Length: 335
Image (cartoon, rainbow, N blue to C red):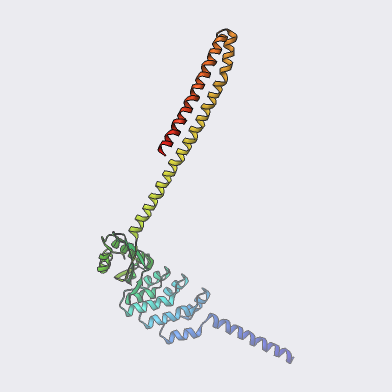
């Protein structure tokens, strides 16, 4: 009997501990008391409802206390809705407080929209008070005389709260400034003009309205450094001359190849003609024999033709011998 009572007592104690733990989990009494002490009217059932909606009450109540102490007109429903939408409630409240202190007009709806758009609303408010300096990478530009200039600039920007949602970011500002620098340097007749007046780049770029459609307002563009680079014009002329030379060599090689092909063609044609001559010469005996058989040519005619051919051959041999003797005597006389 005594053991049964002990077991019952232990069971009751465990049940009470579990019930109290569940109660404290769903009913954050400590947080409710802190809110009441701070003068924030938050109902206990409202906190229980947050638990049931899987909303951390501390993520709502603590920023609410901070907002009320700062004099902001923010209620629980606004903060909870922003939390359920995936926003950072604490950062939004901090941004509202900073904007209130800096006299920057910023509503909760605008701050929540900026936060949900993926931008740091607190950093944006701070940038509105303390402008940010963006340093561009080294930008290469070429003047009209072909000299390359390497320019590095510093852009001072201030966040534009009204255009943070849907406005372009820092990379767009850097790209636009780089485009303006390239255009300004490219329109200069001499690179020395830019070296003498680097502020001309700043004035020209600022007048282009590069911050249109961006989340920033450009306050100033300062040229930090200008270095002289390569002679691009001379290099391009050299490359063009080299290209022309290669084209001329290719054309000459083409003409040479055509000449060689023509020579080979003429040699083949000469050999073909020689073959035809040999073929025609081979038909002469046949024609003679046929003429003898048909009676168109007599035997004496044949012998007379042979005598004429032998006489002609002898005359050619004598003429070649005389020419060689004349050339030999002429060379001896010169000696």
